[in-house]
Amino acid sequence: MHSLTTKIGAFLIVTLLFVAIFAPWIAPHDPNLFAIQEAFAPPRVGYWFGQDADGRDIFSRIIYGARVSLGIGFTVTLISLVVGCAIGLLSGYVGGVVDKTISFVSDVFLAFPSILFAITIAAFLSPSIGNIILILSLKGWVTFARLVRGQTFSLKERDYIRAGRALGASSLRLCLLHLLPNMVGPIVVNISFGLAGVIIIESALSFLGLGVPIDTPSWGGMLDQGTQYLLVAPHLSIFPGIFIMLIVVGFNFLGDGLRDKLAPRGK
Image 1 (tube, rainbow, N blue to C red):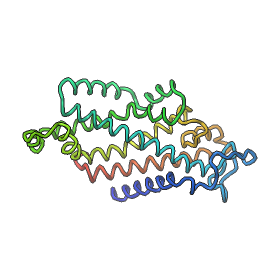
Image 2 (tube, rainbow, N blue to C red):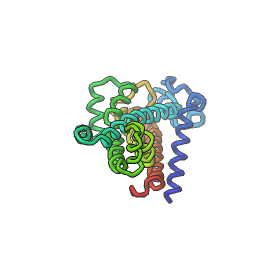
Image 3 (cartoon, rainbow, N blue to C red):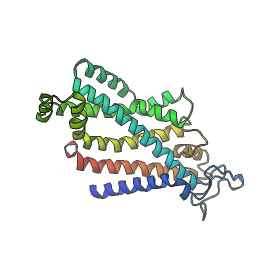
Image 4 (spheres, helix red, strand yellow):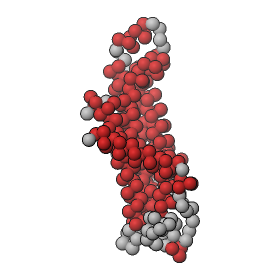
């Protein structure tokens, strides 16, 4: 069963990545081309998902929206991964006052729900992709830092680490070449779940008008626009909602499968 869900998750993610990368060749229309006379047109041949309130092709905007959601998701996760791993290794390996200070800062960040934290910061910044990446990265590192810190504490007293110290290996070498490679399993699992979380929050911010600029194709922004015409043209909300669900389900399915394969003791 887990193998099946893992394959489904991988298929969804690979498919949407392919769509995002080759969007200019897959999208049948310009996603920002207005055709007011065709506003709210239902799905049909050539306009598979219909047209929105400005007559723009929803299918093309969904395709370009995948670029936005996945681009933000992977960028934020990469930044969070690098920063979180560095801080987690420092905290777990050095210990003492450094660990207590980092743990306190992490606890402060974790005290705020991710979506509330993002909304609060976004309210003071102008909507842009760069600002969204900044906002989500400000808190994204904490989960990776705590994971790596815990793994470092359990690994740093192993015999092979002690042997490395005795042979004169530097702390940096031990951390990068011996500690970090032995945490790959849990980190990869965390990446998958983290990507799903980032995409949900980005979509929520765009839905609230605090995310990407309004003229940029975004699943959350499309969902927001669609709610204004839910009774008149439900397809405006249905299709972006489906794709948000698919990408989140894909990463969660993949994360579940990877957890079973790479970190079975974490079940």
